Length: 361
Image (cartoon, rainbow, N blue to C red; front, side, top):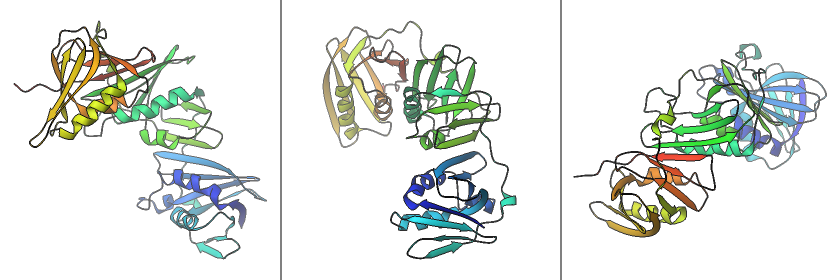
């Protein structure tokens, strides 16, 4: 018998994370359990779908070390119904009993410990610190990943590119948008890692993150959580080639004004979410229309280019603009059918791109 005592509220954030990899539809029933790994004073909760494994560490009262299986759905549903209270969890040969001052609740695990597949382990080759700015950029990059309809090219992942002098975070949907952010780094190896957006979501709220990897897996760890995921073998597109060379900014505009204008124009969007930008040296006029609505909206700007008009997907453009919080941005707009590059003097490492929509003749 294994026995631990833990606060029910301490389990809630752990169960929320573990639920991202544990499925009631798992092909192997044993994967519907949490593996509880107990050492004196600590409980490590482990969940896996064999592609991603989560290790979540909690303080507890535990007189002896050991391992046992705890059915995820049972403990998750029980904790959701309980107020904060000390719980005693006892593991017997064929069942687990959870009890508190109000009663006791028991369930049988799905399968046996020996049926659990070999767990993914944290790569030990290299530990790289991921500071808050880099991680926030990774979260931001999730906004512009592909939706899985484009085959290959790794576009459903966030790219983390490592070199001896910098880290680059990038993402693209493969047709309209590119996001790129560069950071100074002391990294010593050249490597391109594709980060699963689900892993990025699981890491939200964690502090002092460290990254490690080898040819088969990528791992992130902090004081409280470790996440290991299978490394994708897909190759990322060369997103830098999409950015035109010698493409200086020529349209300066307030980001908040532009966001407001695009949101208003979206009231009359057609099936392509198209918004027409008509450009003059001291202002931009945005217009959108569909079978029942017509919207026109003007904002101040400074423009030195020669392109008179361009059509953009307002939904995609708003998504790119949500990745910045600085007020003044600059757009490089030199041909109505070529990429438009977005930069910001207050955020030197950032570069975005949006492709225009072909104008109707």
